[in-house]
Length: 461
Image 1: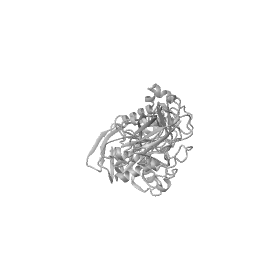
Image 2 (image 1 turned 90 degrees about the vertical axis):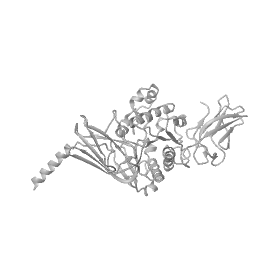
Image 3 (image 1 turned 60 degrees about the vertical axis):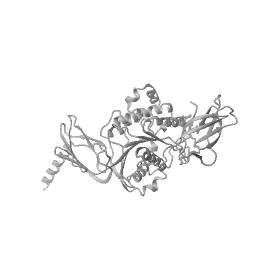
Image 4 (image 1 turned 180 degrees about the vertical axis):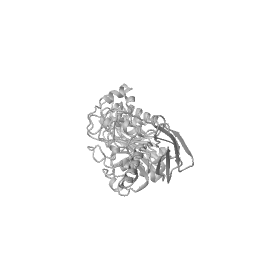
C-alpha cells in the first residue's frame, strides 16, 4: 500500500508541477466584475493552446488561443448588476479553472498614499463600523505593496468578502465609499485598493511619461530616493501595483494623495493630468477620476500645502473629474492623518452618485471661487456651486485677506450676501485682490448651505 501511495503522490506532484493554466490574482473566487461592460480577461497556459471560457450568466462559449509566449486574452460581456453569484469556467487542454461566487456590479480603484491606505482599524470612526461590516455585496481586493524598475504582469492580492475581519486593515475611505454606494444603488460594489503611504505621485506615473517632459523630470529629480518607508522614483509603484491590474474593467478611480508632493506644488496639476491620461489610456476607459484635496497641516514647508491645494482645484480642468474638500474634517493640524475617514468616503460617494450614477438632490460639490468685482472700496467674491447660498459657522466668515496695488495683505472683514461675499479692510482703500484660507493649516468657516466647505483661493497670481 505504501508503494501505491508514494506512486500516486508522485503522479500528483508531477501533474501539479506541469500545470500551466494561470490567471492574474484579480481573477479569483469572490471577485466582482463591472456590469454591462466588455471585460478583458487574460492569463497564461501552454504555448499555442486553445482556450475556452464559459460563464454561467449566458450560454456563450468564448474561444481564444495562447500565443508562443503562453499569453492569452479574451473579452467577456457582463449582464446588469445582480447579487446572484455566477461562475466562470476556463478550460485549457486538460486543465480547468472554475471561479466561484462571482458577482456583477460596480468596481472602483482606490489609490494614493497613507490617507487612502489608512485602515478601518486605525480610523476613529472605523472601529465601530467595522464590527457591523458583514456586507456580502461588498468585495475587497488589496494590492500588496511592491515596486519594480520594469512593468510587472502577475501581481499579488486576493478578493475577500467584506466581513469585520477582512475589512479591518482595508482602506477606511474606500470602505465608507463602497458602503454608501451599495446602500444607494442596491448593487454589489468591488474595491481594488492600491495605495502606499508616503509615495509621491511620480511613482504612480509611468516613468517614460515623466522622462519625456523636462518640467516633470526636474520636479521628480527633487524628490530624491531616501525615504526608508517607500520608494520615490518615477514609475516604480505603477510598474508593480497598477500595471498588473491593467486593463481590468473599472467604473472609476478614487485618489487621495498629494502630501508627498508639497515640495514641488507648482507642477502637481501637470503631473496629475499626465498620470490620469496614461491610466485611462492603459485601462482602455475614460473613467471618472474623483480625488480628495489634502487636509490642512501645519508642518509643510513654506506655502507648499496651500499651493498644492490650489493645484488640486485647478485639476478640475481634467475631464470627468471631481474634487472633495475636507478642510472642516481636521481635529489637529499637527497631524497629517485626519482621524475621521467616514465623511471623506461618503463625500466621494456623493460625487459618484451625482456625476456617475445620475442621482438627484445630493449635495456633492463644494463652492468654488468664480470671480471678483471691485465695488466702492470693497470686493465682491462670487462662487460656483452655491444653489442655496453660503453660510459661516461660528460667527462672521474668517480667513479672508485683502490687498491693494502694493500687494500688502491685511486681515479683512467679510459679509455674506446670498451666494457672494463682500470683503473689505479699513487699511485698504483701493483693493485689487483677495485671498481666502491662504495658509497650510487654514481651517476657514465658510460653507455652502448644504454644509460643504469652500476651499482656499486667491484672486491674484
